[in-house]
Length: 254
Image (cartoon, rainbow, N blue to C red; front, side, top):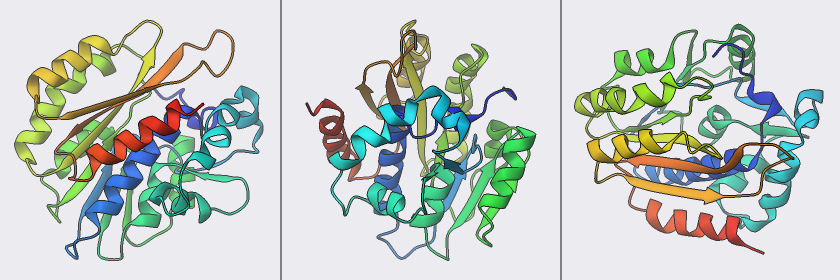
């Protein structure tokens, strides 16, 4: 949806879940000296100012990164990416990838929203980065299998319309047939309506060996429908299972 702007939600609890898991996966993949490809289907602007009026209006960062940051050890790759940001800047997933990946790696980012696309191009000026004003799912299909073939794809739509839930299982089947070695990480919100449940069932049916991880947290404000955050990970890196258990403890800490 072209109405969605993530600045209102940047740094919320779902971002912490998604971005911490992404940082662990990229950190693990870069241990080997072989180059890799990072693809993101819904990139947003890549970098967010948590002091901006839009971010302050919702208060979601105050209920997310502000509360949870201290639960991560200083050497956690997510904390390292946060520490690299100046002032009140919060790294979206493109900026986390930019920080953790190496000169030999390639980054492909799709964003359709005109303002977000322009901000993304400004925020991530980097010879490794290619930015596309294009539907992210279509771009991913056109890029796969990527070169380099090793790599990770992050898929995190806004889910503002029901069709985004409906199309992902079939789309993922096409991606994994073309790119059977790629790590594909799909994020989904856990809402009071449980809108994600049919999609997750279909994803599991098509990819029974994938890893599912969910965390729960209180609504950011009265009437807020998001109760948690989920990840569905195809070809999870070896370190992922243990890292996600640690991440569960971050959200379950008193």
